[in-house]
Image 1 (cartoon, rainbow, N blue to C red):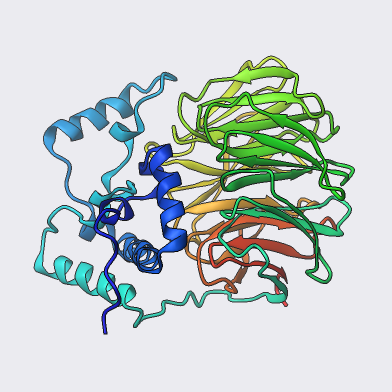
Image 2: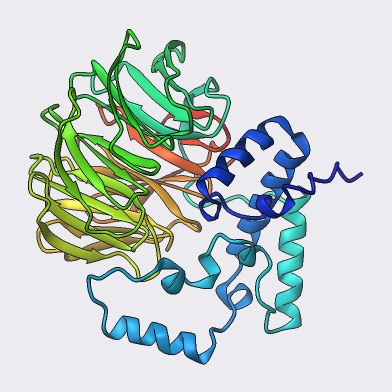
Length: 432
C-alpha cells in the first residue's frame, strides 16, 4: 500500500538537493521535514532514486551536450586560467544535484530507459539491497546513536579518550570513546554543525556551523570561549593549527579565514577560490594550508600571508569535498565528486597515486597518525583503507547503512571512527 503523499506546497523543494536550495528555503524545509513524516519519507526516497540513477553507466544517464556546450567545454579545457568559471557552466549534467538529475534527459535507447526505471523504482520501494563484496572487513567495536540525526562532523581527541560528533540536530556531543557514554552536549548553534576540530591539548573544541559561526568551547565544561562571526555563509570546514594558536575555517562565502583561537583576531582572509570552500588542512609545520572546494581546485598557500604556492586541478567540473595532509611527509590526499582519491606531492603537485575503489562521491579522508594508511569514506556507504606507500587497497568497512560523511583515526592508529547519514557514529578496527 502506498504511503501518504508529500505536502503539495513542499513537493517541488523536496525534489532538489540541499545545495540547490536558498539558505532560507533550506532552513524552512528542514524545519518542515522534522515534523512531517510523509515529506521526510519523500525526501529519503528522492535520495535513494538519485543514488540509483548515479550508479548507472554514464552512457545511460548522461545526455549528449549540444554543439554549443561541447565547444564551450573544449575552450575551457584548452585555455583554463586561475579565474574562476561558474560551476553551473562547468559541472557535468550527470552530477548536478538538481531536479534535472532526477528526471534526466531522454536516454538514447529503450534499454537505457528500462534500466533507469527499474533501478529507480526498485531502490525507491526498497526491494533491492546492493552490497559491495570486495575486501569486506572490519569489526564494529561501538556504535553511538546519541546524535539522533545525520552525523556530519566528527573528531577524535588527541589524547584518545573522547570523540566529538556534530549533526543536523544543531548540537555537538562529546562522548567516551571506550563506552559511548555522553560526557557533554553543546547547544549553542542554531543550524547543523558541519565541522569539528580539537585543540592539540584536548582541552578545547571548535565547531563550525551553517549558522555562519565557529564556536570554541572549553571541552569539559561547555563554556563558550569564543564565537567567531566573520563568515557570511555556512562554515563547512574547521582545522586547528598544530601549535594550538590558530584556527582556519572555510565557508560558503568563498573564503578561508585564519584567526587566533581564543580571541578571534583575524590573521589572514584567503579568497583565492571564488567558490564554496568545502575542505582545508594544515601542513605539519603550520606554515601552509591546503584548501579545496566547488571550483575543482586545491590551492596550497602561506598560512600567514595568503600567498598561493601551488594550484592543483583535482578534476574539471568536479567538486573537492575532502582533503588530508599526511602527518609524516609532504603528501596530500584529495577526494570528491569524481569518486577517486588522488594523492599528490605537496611540494611539486606531482600525482603519486589515484585510488579508484569507490563507486560514489568521496566525502571524507583521514591519514592514520603514523602515516602508514589512508582511510576514505564515500556516499557508497563504505570506508576503504589504503596502503600509503603503494596505493593498494587493504580493507573495506561496510557497517553503515547510508553515506559516510566524516572519518577520524584514533591517535594510536589502531581504530577508525566513522560518521554517517544513518544517524550513527561507529568505532571499528580495520581488518579484524
